[in-house]
Image 1 (cartoon, rainbow, N blue to C red):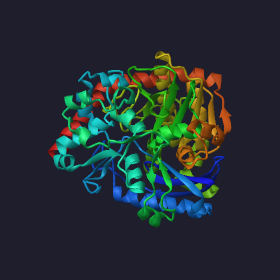
Image 2: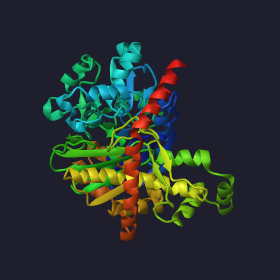
Image 3: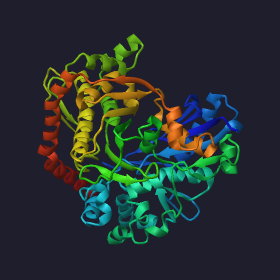
Image 4: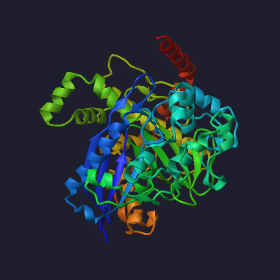
Length: 519
């Protein structure tokens, strides 16, 4: 019997593949970069040809690093960003670049769809709809690029494209279909009443008819991809899902009371609910979207790690760079040390991290970033810390909304890039007042993909059994009560900043869009 599995995580910045054993130990990792394309404000696209290269390079890199005999790998699991939409012609050739998850060009379509009042909108509490979701982007494409829409034989997501390239099978997956397409397996699948109301009545002919559950065998590795990657032909490929949801598996936040905090360029918050939860400002609850019989509640922030990266890329001065060179560390190390010496609240700075709008709890594609309270005494370290705090404030606003819906969170389990900063995790714990557990394996999304692969490989009988065996906790961060108390006023200011500026932000976006149309 095969002893190892391969987990592939297609993220915003790169494809990452890892070879894992059945204890959850990573034996080798491969990474290949993506390239983000921003042609207009609020747009985000990626070249699918680059995906092809990155998929192969990451797999080959993992195999080489692990020194494992490819014949000993028994299954492949995977995930992708969502909602990242792909349009293929009848030959399986992409008709345009993929429209990325962060793309919010379809804000107008989102408002129009939300106004229909269709029963399927219970997933958004019959409130605002995020422009990131599938019907918004597809409707925008039909209206603005009709040749792409009309020619498309298949419209699905990045995760489904990965399954297609590895197995040759056209499939959808229950996770992204439920969480982004309004699919409901318990009510017959895709809600055609909604799609017909918005002018997408023919969508049923373009989306995959076969919808995979996570961990279900999609097919075997094709001879073509076996040759390109060095893997044996026929290895079973498991049905995957959105990266954040697969990360929930990778941190084993599969029981009530636990919330997975998946950090990276964006941030997602996902928890298991024993009952259905439908309310404004939260997404879901999504039935069977991860494991059969369970309901999952989701929230998220569009711009988190990406805002910190933006700040470092554009505004870090030469003095900080010189110190990083002198000490042998990174700019992150220097700024983390300086920011840690500052008091909670960054001496009066409040940042609204809405560089790409707000996903939850306000679901506002027109909101924009704000840095408020600047004085001549503030330094780059103040702004750096204030950005970190703003992300934590956004998470606290989400938890408050969960509490209002009687969905209690006792513990946060975090993974991803932000967990590399002890300061940032302590800020999250202090702001929310919740303990945070950090799993041993920080490539939790890749591990989650690997866990799904163990089921098709026959190493474990269920995803829960595999997660219990393969996920361990490295450390636990407790909130500091006095900091929690101090941060309450700042969270209130964060909340007030959004509400004071939301109408002005909308008008500003309309002004920018009008100028773009004239050019």
